[in-house]
Length: 134
Image (tube, rainbow, N blue to C red):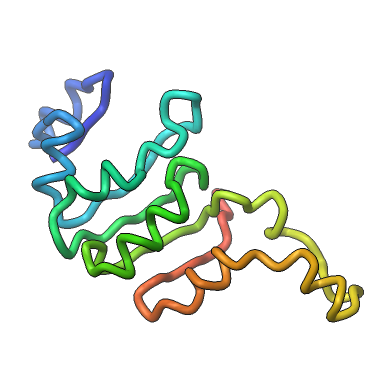
């Protein structure tokens, strides 16, 4: 099953069944995100969207971090609605990823602490990897 505002005949020929976004949320065991970050897609995965998802859904985001509202993701993990998460992007990645903090003092590093990222990393069912497209 899939959702795209611009349906693709090749996907249909491969057996893809297009549904509305709400139908995908309620039917999919695994939701993978492959889309650009636009004003219309920012926080597409939020508390309201997660509430529509199957209990035990797995979410994989390989597009852009701000597609997902991080606090909503944490809420879904905490309540058990989301079983597992795979991310190679993060909402505030421009402030954290691909930077060398090794030269900073512990105090300076703590001043740039990201509690949401730290909490996500603490979940046993969350995998965060670098976004290294090619």
